[in-house]
Amino acid sequence: MSLDRDFIVGLPKAELHLHLEGTLEPELKLELARRNGVDIGQTAIEEVRATYDFHDLTSFLAVYYPAMQVLVTEQDFHDLAMAYLRRAAADGIVHAEMFFDPQAHTDRGVAFSTVIDGLWSAVQEAPSLGVDASLIMCFLRDLSAESAMETLEASLPYRDRIVGVGLDSDERDNPPEKFSEVFSRAREAGYRLTMHCDIDQADSIGHIGTVLHRIGVERIDHGTNIVEDPALVAEARERGIGFTCCPLSNSFVTETMKGREIVDLLRDGVKVSLASDDPAYFGGYLVDNVVALAEGMDLTREDVARLARNSLEISWLDADRRAQYLDRLDRYVAG
Image (cartoon, rainbow, N blue to C red; front, side, top):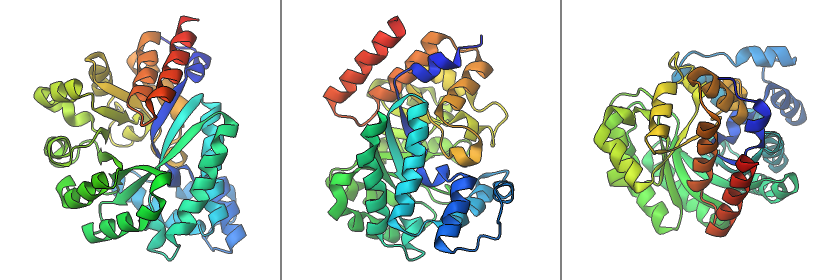
């Protein structure tokens, strides 16, 4: 069936899998390049947009990381986050937990403090848009565990600004156990834990088992290959493990967006939520992802409401705030 987009927009919901660097729209990229005197090789919006071309994870990352060179000052990071938060508000998002990749900036000479101060100023401004926001610091898994540990230590003076840690970038030859010590240290520091388990990777099930049993994450980003092991699905359901799934970015890997897997997990009681991943590159923000899945998989209003409920239930909001949003969601659906 075709669901009313306005109904989807109006659902109070959280976005929990959103890379701020992946919200760098061509217009902002060009603006920042001009502001900072960075030669990106393009001078028109359409020229920039044409560079956002890729066909797999490796070619995506080859576009993704060089684009970040335009992010130089604290104001740049503030403007990047605010541009996303305005879009989040328009999509009816009431809570956003935003990933950022400090190593992608510190490795090119931008100070950690510049990154975090710019992003944090946007987090503080977010309530004026009707959005609660928080930051999740991700480690780049294709860099060394030592680099990740150094980044973790650098983050500790800003512990009150960062709710949790994650792991992203190229999963090939970079299994979760590579970062076991880093995530153990992060847990000791009080951070919440999530990790990417990208779709259709080598040993996907092995990696999912590792993050559940050895790393001890609360959420898994992507992770729909778990359907290949019914025992792991049952465990994830019983433990209330959250999954943050991204249909539109999945569509660059598989024609079906992993739609059947997402819906099967949802209807099996697993805490599946939807998110937009890197929306400037994959062609859609959160509501676009919900609409795509709803239309492709014939979702009901109840399915879509359950996705919204799951997003709030697996968020890292405090209990009182979560309860307020869930009550608001219930009243919206009932009305």
